[in-house]
Image (cartoon, rainbow, N blue to C red):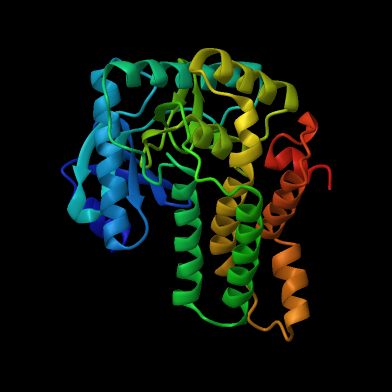
Length: 324
């Protein structure tokens, strides 16, 4: 269904459409209502079950946070499960610069969510990781998706690469370690899901929100390909999570490598759609897809981490890729 057809079915009456912003899990249409106010129509992507899961979680997360006094979040105007969308009041802002002020806002949000978790419990995050085994299962599910969706040279090579790295990880870290402490997590933390406005920083996109381990929250933040904070800000973030949330940064020695494999699988999934099927040989595929892609760089970072490297200048995925 195109947006013209969608807009005719909304309770809110649209007078003009301005732009469509494409994201990994949704597209957002900026539009003006007849009263001259602006809205953001968020249309979720994926299969039917995934869409409803994300939509339900975003709706419940925002309602939960709003009822507990959070003001730095979107305002829902209309929910339409039949159209796979939620209508929000438009937030007039820009993507923030990853500087000290932005990190202050991220730390403040993390601490506020942790404090709220102690008072009012919420559901587990989508893809929460309470044990190392949870993360392993998520990786294996992604490997299975590669095999089920397109069992050809490309998907086979990706599957074999991920399986080999996972075996290597398990040979080193044999214990199914519990991941503590727990907290409420945005679950996709970073500047890519924030806006800087005249009223300060706002957080958007709560479709994966819920209770999770601090290990996984921190690890995913460090591994996101759009985390462009400098090392001193990253170190400040880790120290604050240690002092305020009771988390131990030493845990990254165990958790970051396996989370890196999960991010490799995510990257390969997105890149798989863009693979040039005309590659004529396995060697060309290895060079262009495995070694030179974002997924391939995650596999390199995995090897760096497994080797025991702990240099602060490469404490995030982006800081690592800047060095190679």
